[in-house]
Length: 322
Image 1 (cartoon, rainbow, N blue to C red):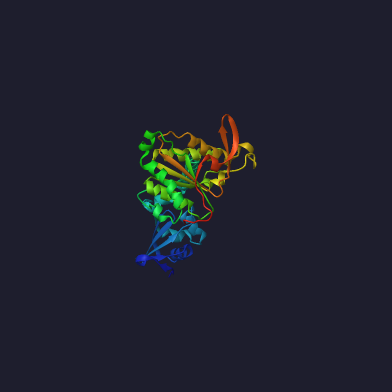
Image 2 (cartoon, rainbow, N blue to C red; image 1 turned 90 degrees about the vertical axis):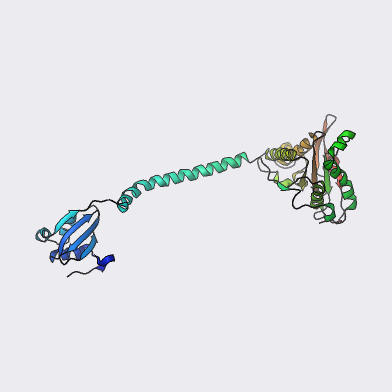
């Protein structure tokens, strides 16, 4: 008498048109409405379900499908109590979805702002590579050749191991050590070996990491570097490719206030401010050693090659250690 697909448990699923035809044929005993769901009990005892149009009355809808008033009088109508998770989800989800989206959006904006603030606060921090003496230890035995350079650096090793002996003698340790030579000749390895022989922390970074597009960041990172090294004293600071922050005064767009110049001068200021008992040695690597820096002597400010400011302790004409 009517057709439709079967749902679970033998319940048939009818379209509204099929339900209307079943009512007209007198096969429907009872209709129960729960929201937009219609549950039908047939006179033969079988059951079926259907869906009514949203926000439309069932009786009015069935009349639009051609069901007469007499046919409807033979059907018992009832309303089911709408409850349960499905009912409440249908009400709450549309209402809460905009709120959930807004909360998620504000949370994402807050996360982004907090990340930006953290980056701003850490902008003047330097990204150090620390080699602890307890791991990845390199000694002079790992460096091939460079006999004279290693002998001169023994003084640095002795100072870091026994600083008290030097202080009692009134000796003054060099403010820094400049390693000069072409790339690949053992400058970095020799610096690490000095730290390994001394069993002290080795702070390694490239001079180009100091420089940013914002003026003052390089000098701030230099101060942060030296503060970190002083807290870990005795220690060694190794600045690779120091030529990257050396530039002729007045060159470039920045003129006399060039960021590179400020960064290099801040390194020299920090070194000049070391106390006699500060067990921090600065080692730098340069390809030529002629990087110009500003030096104040006897009230005069003049340019000098960095090799004359930081004691040259290592020269190479091609002899390699790396």
